[in-house]
Image (tube, rainbow, N blue to C red; front, side):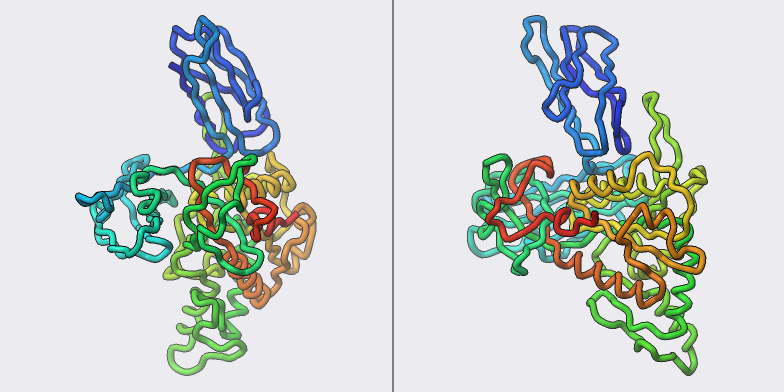
Length: 465
């Protein structure tokens, strides 16, 4: 009877056109933004200009009113909230007694892509799966519920995630919707779901926690162009001094800090160490996002699509290698939109409901052509519970300036050792995060921690004003 036709590609701020498809029997349409009346339409064309205000997550609802003044239909659309580019579902196969014995996964993407990488975990532990068409579930003792999660990676940086809870009270609730809330346990002890009763509330209503997991981390680096040259110089520093770098185990990898490799193959060995410097855990997702965009025209509205790399793996190289690579894409603008790109990176980092972080790698002093301000972007990322780490790469030509003033409290990166220290800090901050899964579908900003909870939301705990 009623549909919101507008797709809301990208981030939406200020006045924005909203178009609806409405059945002829509808007498009027009420548009509500975050629960408040935004517009009333009583005749075609069913279009309105809705003011979304500053950058923030929103909920847009359209109510179809019939001739008697009653609500005949309604539809909801989330705006400026993380949303998937692909969707996946997991189905459980049960035996005669109703216990799940196997699972299968289906997915849908634009272009009918096949996954190039899959990850399945059960209660936070990896589950070996040979085929997503059907895979057996292990027999687990007891009547507790279990948390099955599936992550699919597709070409072009597209990903899909799905999860299901079964067993215990969830024996017949395989389709239960869940909400992921990233937190830090402030007393250092990772809690079990049953120990978190009363910690999470919506309004005054306590919410049931069904799982707590660590899982992989989503790391998105917004890299301005001038960082490439500075990072290449740092790579040269590391090449000359040996590494001893932070690796997947959190300790030192091959090579001793301050030592020089020697003998046959020493140059090749050092080059390989340079390429593998500063890696993350093998299951983590690292991507680069460039603050250069191309314009996309849709429904009379111009959107900007930023260049983002596919997932970068430890086999390809570490963070230092990734900072020096060329991610050229045809048709992008010559100007940089740094703040806008950080906002997009924040929404992208929150898509997968994982531990997450956005790194802004700055250098140079060129103009930022963004529509959004750095202050507005920081506030938006806090709302999404995405921590922001700002690194300023220094060389003789970029010791300060306007960019550094716009992003205060940036960590200065003037040497390979500085970068290694920054990565150590980032890894520690990621390791402190946990994802708490709450029963039901909720807007993240509507969930709060009770005063007695020994935890903090990630967006608040790692706030970088």
